[in-house]
Image 1 (cartoon, rainbow, N blue to C red):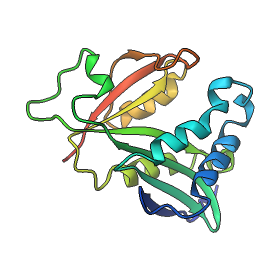
Image 2 (image 1 turned 60 degrees about the vertical axis):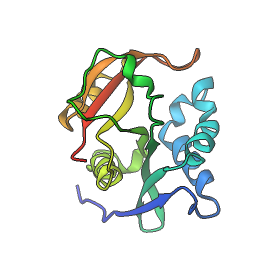
Image 3 (image 1 turned 90 degrees about the vertical axis):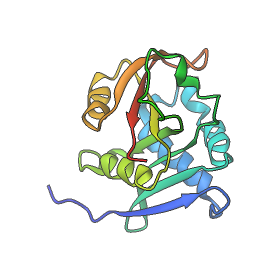
Image 4 (image 1 turned 135 degrees about the vertical axis):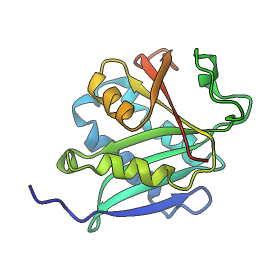
Length: 176
């Protein structure tokens, strides 16, 4: 299989181009086309608005020419309000700040080419926080194993919304 040349474009809060939020919604609709009857997935536009409005929001979009192949985004957690800290995990001394990786997805046409790892690396490359945290559906052990291969550790489980799946809470030390 020939790999496509993928360009990683970086975006941040306060500097989002017109149509940016719709681009994320459209990529999500393609990535989750077989799951769009789920009310939780139908609310993705709310999550895009919530996260992209957050101070410190950053996003990396992978492009194959002019086509968005996938994206990853997140934002720094508010100190003292890091929702994952109720897990049975004690970070190393002095490791206090957290970057929340909210979404990472690749459209079906571009999967199995290493794009998700490249997106993840590009998103976290210049982060100054001590830790990264993310959620993975517990019904997806292969995805959890992938994140573990990237240095994440499962520290608990959480269902953040009444209609959301149960997620594994995963934390990773960042170089900081």
